[in-house]
Image (cartoon, rainbow, N blue to C red):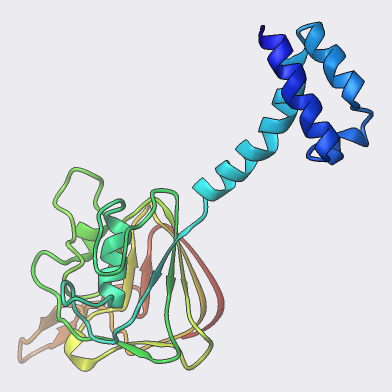
Length: 232
């Protein structure tokens, strides 16, 4: 029964030209009928399904695109800021004003403008909390530098040198920290105004000294970082 159904349908598809790509390989109306008669119909069925499954797989792995539409440094303001876009990537499958991030790959698109970071870090938003292993107290990315913790690939792309991520004096922090599990690509943009935390200062009147500050004026990277056409 299944073989006869297969023969009828596939023979009709061939006669209509729906399987022109297969006919060049020698699949004719008679050939389809013979394959089905000997219960070899699954061969053609597999040949038809492979391209469909390939396209479905490609669509499933396509990066989610988050478009920043405000230069304000905020989360939950009703528009998609750069900080909220990073937060969205850190919490995939959770819908925000920026959309919904993917668990495999994400793209943040910036316009030809200056996205300013201005919120100074709180006690919870530290380097160690950002790069800490899963399960410990996390950096909430709500203040200070942008903290990328997602293990999904992230690309942040601008429109060239006029796309600027700028740390204002009020930020008193670097621009971004990348956790060990994160992979970030920066493309066609400018980074400016970041400032790594200063070291402690000894104010003794006899011998005033200052300890070394932290690493990474613009970015503190403990994961994977790729840059292309980026000005620091």
